[in-house]
Amino acid sequence: MTDRTLWSYADIADYICVQVETVRSYRKHGHLPEPDLVQSGKPYWYADTVRAWSARRPGNRGRRDEG
Image (cartoon, rainbow, N blue to C red; front, side):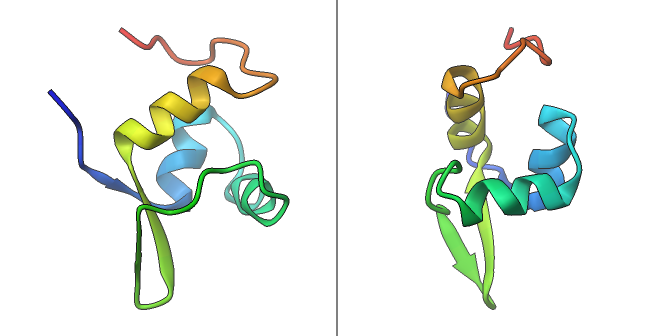
């Protein structure tokens, strides 16, 4: 089953245990996938997109249990 819940910068930051500005910096430097949706100028990602990115990103120290 896919999770199409839309996540904001804040949701991603909470998930990977960093500050929101860190996530913004990841996007600015091309370390975050392209948003799945941009609404009113704000980017959003599907939860599955973020989970997949987090699992393969450099420096992932297993901060979240993927199960």
